[in-house]
Image (tube, rainbow, N blue to C red; front, top):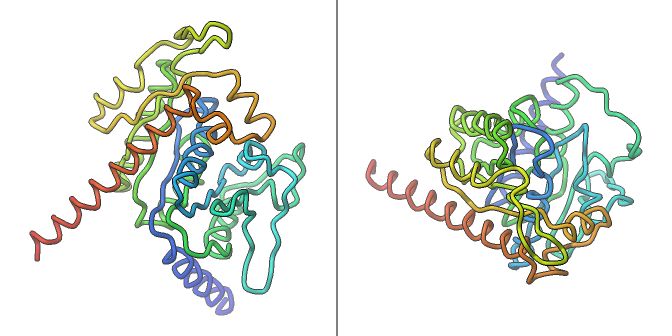
Length: 286
């Protein structure tokens, strides 16, 4: 029993030490599956890297880890050394960790209960050699269950959450739960992203609101949190992700790429505002 307690204490110390080297931490959430949360996570990470930041992307969607495939790293394998696990470098300044890189085949289901999932997430945070990072982006599975709760509890210094939804009312209803999840855990809500805001015809460029319009923006206003922006459905973006191409850098002038850059600029601006407000509050107390 004493040995187990010592192991936990040692892991907690490693986690604290690893996270001390990371300046900012972002949690990407969605209340509902299929809204493109991983697409947003991947493109936030790529856009930050494109801006010159050092970035880590952690995939905690253990049952459906798609981050590696979207980045063209689906054949990558994590390597473990005595001093920890080495993340896979997709770019010089973008490191990625996903369960799909740990030897689990693409067709192999992960049939785990909560304690196992919590243990793996904690291991990724404590034992991965992230090094010095400007940003760690954490992609979580849909909902407000074990995975996002574990990340939130292990990283109380989180800069904030990004909530992804589509304009559909059923998705918006669930996104409100993610916003309230963040508020109850004292995680600043950096904003809402409305994904799939319209379908862009690849031939004429006309946008059709397949799932409605401005639902995410309306939910953000009603919940009194920032609206970060809307990303349309672009066939070329979907094809790029299926084939592991980095659409942000390969098609910088596309509508989706421009939308994602604007969203990231808004995220950075909101982090800066929150830091300034926190500093002002501490100054007033002092």
